[in-house]
Amino acid sequence: MIAVIQRAIAQMLAQTGLDEASFKVLLCTVLSFPFSLVFKRLPDQKYTLKNLYVVSVSMFYIFGILDLGLEVLTLLVSLFGCYFITRYIRTSLMPWVNFLFLMLHLAYSHLNAQFFNTQDLSRLDLTGAQMVLVMKLSAFGWNVHDGKVNELPSDYTRSRAIRKHPNILPFMGYVLFYPALLTGPAFDFVDYDKFIHSTLFDDVPEDKRPGRSRKRRIPKSGKQALSKVLQGFFFAGLFVVIPQYVNLDLALSSSFVTDHGFFYRIFYLWILGFTHRLKYYTIWLIAEGACILCGIGYNGYDSKTDTFKWNRVQNIDPWTFETGQNVHVCLEAWNMNTNKWLKHYVYSRLAKKGKKPGFKSTLFTFVTSAFWHGTRPGYYLTFVMGAMIQTAGKIYRRNLRPIFLEADGVTPKPTKKLYDVVCWLVTQLAFGFVVQPFVILNFGRSLQCWATVYFYVPLGIGLTLFLFKGPYKKQVVGLCKSLAPQKPVPIKESGLNEKEAEVIQAAVEKALARESNYSTLGVPPLDVLEDATKEELEEELRDFADTWTSFRGRKGSFSNDFDGLKDAYNNFTSELNEIINSKKDELQETKNAMKAQGKGE
Image (cartoon, rainbow, N blue to C red; front, side, top):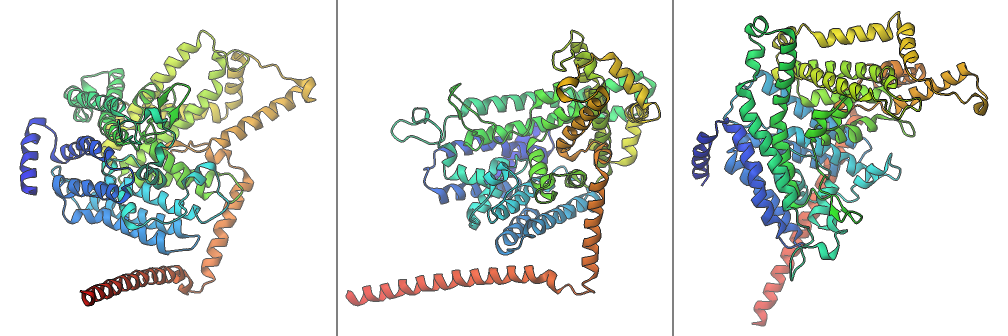
């Protein structure tokens, strides 16, 4: 059977021009639509049947289409390792043990792919699917932990908490959910659980439920799903056409510099960066469409507009990214579920109880995000440069934007449109420069690509930091303030003089900046350390020192470190024995009943 499927795939592959691995991923994503049509018509109350259906479709993808063998162990190790840790380790450190296990396993896969495996375009590299699993499974660990504590840091974490650890089948259905198996989107277990039990659709009005005699709880979503699919295929068409005219090979050739001027080259990198994004737009939009069709994309009913919202698992907003006027806006529209994961399950989890996340959280989020993407040098060049352009953007927004606004700081002047166009152009050109190493990956070739445009972005950032942070800071900032409309200072009402009011205003602006220190995709602005207070730095250093002192005080004895693991093993064997004894009792009762029936006859 598998051989027949593979021959059919080979015939289709010959007509597309795609490599085999990419074609199979696309095929699995497209097949999720007919499979979702079937899923929507399964009985609402047949929870086990729905979970079995989800797992079965994923198994068909893995073995039937992708033709994977032992490679599937990559996913199964993460799946069963997380299940064991979250179910049987019952200490407060469980989420961190789970996180460390998942990240170390992912690191092994990244390093193995980088140093020991040669690229084979005919075989699917499951590292991408494993990255999705790391998000889902590390979040699952925190959700289980949150279900056992009373005080939680936010409404979001309270809404995600898992009060009862699921059995293995629904857990596998969540992890191996077929529309999101290979490329995402990632989502939390509570969303999947509500989806399987159909409680996700409790707010759907009765007259909006499809079906004549038997009203189906999942509302119609064909038009919304089709919209995402059409967008995906539009970008797929661009992905096929544009590389014929704009490609990385030309950007790395010697003729790129000798035959073309500087401005041509920077705009070429901009279009090239857009081309790199097209494959992500394609697969994420089609996958989102499949999630919408089966129902898990449902995000509530709006009675005012009489419409359904279908953005629960949205992962990309191409229009917002391509029209973004600053780095933060663009990154918020990119890989949105990864942003949520980093914010709620990495960034906020490092803050001490009762305190807001500080610079340690921001930097750890940056490291996690970079390491999650991979170990190749190109990723780190992109992330470091991303931090620098975000810092430069904040500087210009703080100092130049007020010049194009009225004194109230809100009403735009006529010249604000010009400012917006310039910001958009600069942001997009900067991305065209920054993202190239993310695709090239090799350190030397990445620098070679940047050299073709004379490293104009880092040089521009260096000039920016020199002007606004260097010896002429007061003069430059003062000039910008003199060009901006002066805001009236309410001296009489506040009892402050003008200088005191300026100091208070600066302190408030700095506090607000610290409130938004979280950076999308873990790319922190470089002024995180500048904003960190001396007291905060000293407190973090004391924490590190106390941890080291505690570690050294053990004098080489690590027996306590394994207590949690021993307890987990005992919990596992205890539960296993309970299941075995229960099954024995059931079997014995069945035998007794058969004997009694035999005597009666």
